[in-house]
Length: 78
Image (cartoon, rainbow, N blue to C red; front, side, top):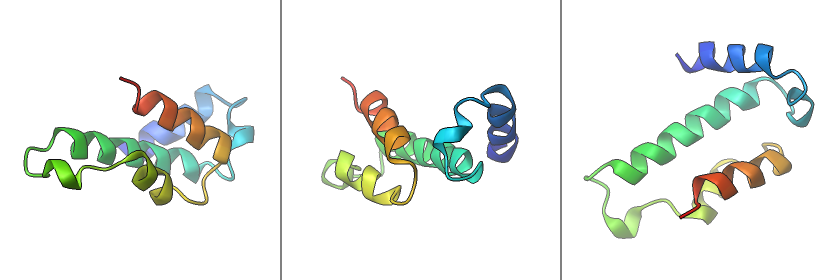
């Protein structure tokens, strides 16, 4: 499902692709956001083990810095 989403995102947003190292970055970011959401809403994850902004950024090392800043600013807004 994420692969199909990633492929369609690339087709629909060709102007944004220039910010990525490769189209695989879309897949990686979609997966990362899904995992972040799971971490946030999973009752089995203790509060002290919840992912922090620094953890999210560290997990996405190597992705496009501009895009990562955009994603983290949107993801962690209150």
